[in-house]
Amino acid sequence: MDTNENKEYGFDNEAVRPADDEVSHEVNESAAAEVVEEVVPEEVEEAPAGDSPEKRIAELEEEVKKEKKEYLFLMAEFDNFRKRTLREKSEIIRNGAEGVLKGILPIVDDFERAIKASETSDDVTALKEGMQLIYNKLRKYLEINGVKEIDPEDKEFDTERHEAISAIPAPDPSLKGKIIDTVEKGYMLNDKVLRHAKVVVAQ
Image 1 (spheres, rainbow, N blue to C red):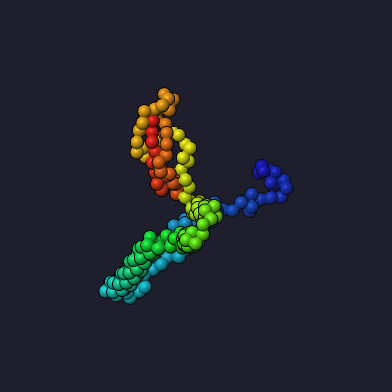
Image 2 (cartoon, rainbow, N blue to C red):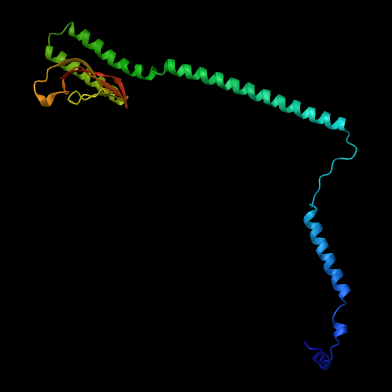
């Protein structure tokens, strides 16, 4: 606003405007306060008055002893855990087949009853049917436990699943390298070969 206009409306510039020294003083104090606030942290942890170096060393030594004791305790606990784990693993390996073998015992009982019945019975047909039932029961039990037969009708020779025990001249050129006969069946346990199938291969 122009000086003349101020006078026209009754304002005195000198009365309204503060002195330059006062403005400068207020700004400097405000800026200084902000700088101090940024530089000096709110809380400063000071060392307790009167603590001697010897006392501080003793405190540190006590802390080291405490941490060493805790470390030794943890090492002992870990060693006990390792020994216990090895013992449990050994027991699992030694008794891992317990459940499977226990399931076979009823089938063994069936075989014993069939053998005993064959001593007093002349009914061959009934004996054959009984043996077939026991065989089917055993096959089903093996399948439940993940044991499956390698397909004997598969004529493609695979060294991962088959073992060639003999080779004969191929009766037909198209059969060269194919399986001609299965001498002994092979079995898989889940996705692993439990026993290779023994086969005769044409060459």
